[in-house]
Image (cartoon, rainbow over all chains, first blue to last red):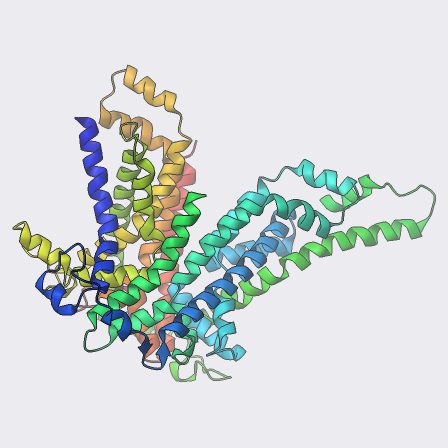
Length: 260
Length: 317
């Protein structure tokens, strides 16, 4: 009896979590008229592609360009973030008492506390002053720092047995050799996890992309979706199709990574 | 210091060779240290340029006249922007909304996350546990804009599946984001859908390292389920509760994306939270007032987060 109740609650919660995906998928392939007639249908009557067709070109921005932008911006900023944060966190954990590093750590924690959405307002001013407004580099560089990456790496490097580093030092290895030949190979599984998490987070980013862009050429999928959703004259099927296109890559990446 | 010590230990300087050998030892030790600064440089540069500089700039901008904020030499106006927002009744109603919403959202998210984590941790749920976990975590990795767009339409009076479903089972219609009375609740449910899984995972990680013997002892002593929850399980979950509380407070005090996608602050200001209100000022190029509001919100977040941290530290005996 208790078991039945437990499963019922878990199933109800799962429906709450998963139903929006089903509805998004089904609504992407049904005409607006069909959805208006029967919003609850759980499978399309027939696969209607007009929603997808309607978003192939959104104003000046093509769907292909938005996809390439998303992939390039999330990909490059992820590589930068993982590299810079891993090196930074390593230096900060190996020399925790150096004054410069202590200050840097406090400063980093401060930026974390600052409400992220409001940090983007002054970042606009900074990017403007650097002359990077409207380009890819401003977006990519802004997305290359993140708190979660730093904490995961810090945790990893703190747990590193000091004997390993001492042994390498006695063998006459320089610090660079210790990092690249000893520490980083040991850190590979965590590096992979951090890379996936960062990619998922940066794929979803929309506000910095919108603020730093000066036209739709540098927009990513979420920004395009936000724009289509805000347009007058509702293209419901197109909105659902674009939401689907935005969600599928990261959902698949997550499910595949979960398997391993 | 450590490197100097270990470098010296590794190859002690030959005695009596004089200053030159010692100097080269020092040089090598110095090079060992500088390499760490080299490692930290990219991280430091990014943190300073895209983190600290913007914060300083933001606080400085809050003291300048908006029209001159982007000029090379802005005109400083003292606390005029702060005085202006303190005279604005909409600022106070927005602040009150933000605090009420943050409180409700924190309680709802942590409550649901805790309940779901306990459910997933239950031995009664032997099969299918990984599926239920996956279902809960999928929204966390879904781009928030996409998730909120779908929820916006789920609530829609003519398209929405929710409206149709409530009609089907004979329940009263839910106003969703169209009615001022229900807009905040609608936003809260959508945010709960997206975020609860994250907090549940933190609870689950803590449950995994809990001392099971304590719960068994409570069972043997004949503790009622609620007694076990309040006197055994919750104290054990203290670290996760503190982490989640701090994180959720920061998260929901700055609620933004869901408002942009679903309500634009409406209807009739029912979801006009502070970060969105500040953003509207930014959008109208009123940078001074916008950054003054941002600074006030920053102070509130800092106060709330450090307050919870301090409480969490004090309770730890």
